[in-house]
Amino acid sequence: MITGKNYIGTKMSAGGSKIFKTFNPVSNIENEYEFYEASTEEIDLAVASAWKAFGSYQDYSGERKSEFLNAIADEIEALGDTLINTYCSESGLPQGRAMGERGRTMFQLRTFADLVKKGDWVDAYIDTAQPDRAPVPKPDIRKMMIPLGPVVVFGASNFPLAYSTAGGDTAAALAAGCPVIVKSHPMHAGTSELVSSAIIKAANRTGMPEGVFSNLNSSGIEVGVQLVQHPQVKAVGFTGSIRGGRALYDLASKREEPIPVFAEMGSVNPVVFLPEALKQRGEALAKTYAGSVTLGTGQFCTNPGLLLGIKGKDLDYFITRLSEEIVLIEPGCMLHPNIIGAYEKNKEKALAYNELKLVSEYDNEIGDNIARQAVTTVEGNVFLDNPALHQEVFGPFTMVVQCKDKEQLEAIILKLEGQLTGTLIAGGNEAVAFNGVIEALRNRVGRIIFNGVPTGVEVCPSMVHGGPYPASTDSRFTAVGINSIKRWVRPFSYQDWPNKLLPEALKNENPLGIMRFVNNQLSADSV
Image (cartoon, rainbow, N blue to C red; front, side, top):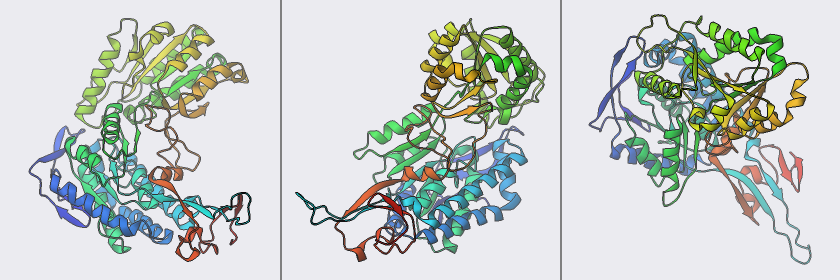
């Protein structure tokens, strides 16, 4: 049952005076439930509770944290149709998408559960003492990763489950040993409350400390600002716009004690179509990319918003076919009136450039909050000279840049801001002749795709979901996969510490049976 209250640990609270509702973009009406925005007192209580929980939770065994994470997945599944129906009513996304995202959320939780149960992730290094070393004896030094402290996670508008309350950021932080405070997204506060109830049930079931998880409602930015500025918050996770992510990053850096903000932000995900590929399969590529541009109404962070090719009849044919294919696809509903409003505004802003040509746009009658997909095209020199055209238009919009030659193509890629993905579409062995283009692309993105589409982020250890700024605030980390746990920990060394007082991962006898680097040799043996 949805109450509209905040979770301060296991306690429900409605101390604030500000009330808001979520919105059903398909029905174009507000949903029935009212939500209470967290007050300053509730924010302080949630953080204090998380800080107290950190005192014990940081030392919980991998086995106990694994039980907790698996229990969260179980409790989310137990929410059944209530969760799915709430998700759909607050996002306008179809039931199939909701069920798929729920499955991904549970998979992420169980993946981290397996990771911490195994234990190797702590990256243990042991360099034993050499008291007889000349001219200076060598001390015994041992290193492992330890958690940072309470983490604030901001729910994402476009992924109400997989990037929100119990999504990848939360799962990774809990796995690392960090209590989590979620600032739920105002567009899906009901979904967040339901998932929060599942997390709290799991915490109670597995004996987690009070305050290991809290969920705070907010209709604006005030709650998020207070959380980021709170001295007992030690890190922030965010998925959303460049403007929002940068604002949080700036707030965190201006604190007396600056803290890391791991923000995954905007990306146009450039796709390079090489000439031979267009010649061989231009029609098929047009159909494939029409589907990719419109997938999820273009509301994926890996939406291909920029297509690059070298001028010629094959690129002309591809543009024609893409323009024809894209309008055959039934347009979809966007997440909220504010989001479709921003889409239309940004599309209009781009089209204000006279040199940018609107090639195709869905022009049949549509309902409320339905986005008209569009294809535009521009000359390479115009694109180079107008950095404003490089910015993301969040939604089912793409721009085809017609480059005069390989050199201009490379120059354009080098001028782009950091991106989550880059894609190379090549035929035969022609990629070999475009090594400069490939190198330029690699320097601007976090993931490069060969003869595929950027939409779709596989949750696996090899996945990098991040990239040079502004794709993310720190390109050394990923927001997806088990390696995302590294965002919420720091390296810590023990020097000449008594064996019985060391953490289990660093003890001589290796009671956890994990793989460790012992004197530069990877081993599971005792020291």
